[in-house]
Image (cartoon, rainbow, N blue to C red; front, top):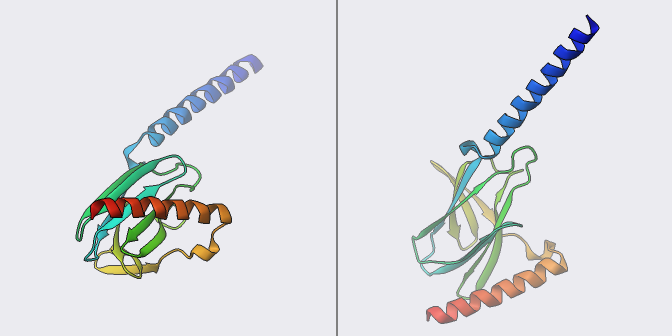
Amino acid sequence: MVASLVNKSMLFFIVTTFVILQLMVGVVSGFFLDTKVTLHNSLVVPVIVHCKDKNHDDGFHVLNSRDNITIKFKRAFLIRKTLWFCSFKWEKEFHYFDIYDQKRHTCTHCIWRIRTYGLCLDTYPDLICFPWNNINNFTPIQKRMLISEEENSDTILQALK
């Protein structure tokens, strides 16, 4: 009787573990973790956009007025830790913004409109606008990275002229 109960408990444990692992694999590779962020240039001048997270670099993109770019990625499953950030350079302006912070955003397709004063999240029919990230809140390492980023953007802007 005891051996039968142990065997049933062990079988239950194995089956439960198998089902959980299957669900996790399905979730991690599943479509419902797919996320898209679209950036729309609402300015009248070209904007150089450079987006990345800690593991991926989407590279530099030039957005002419009214152009869009869409970045696709998968959100983290168990721990809400996905963070994508971008730099924006046009004329003499250089700014930085967290375009997707999983702790703050719930959208699966976020649409941001680039404005001179910051980015506006399009939550049709409303726009929710946010100011650019404040560079004074960055660490010295982050500031050095941004200066390098700005210099690379300047090189691209010069090549466009």
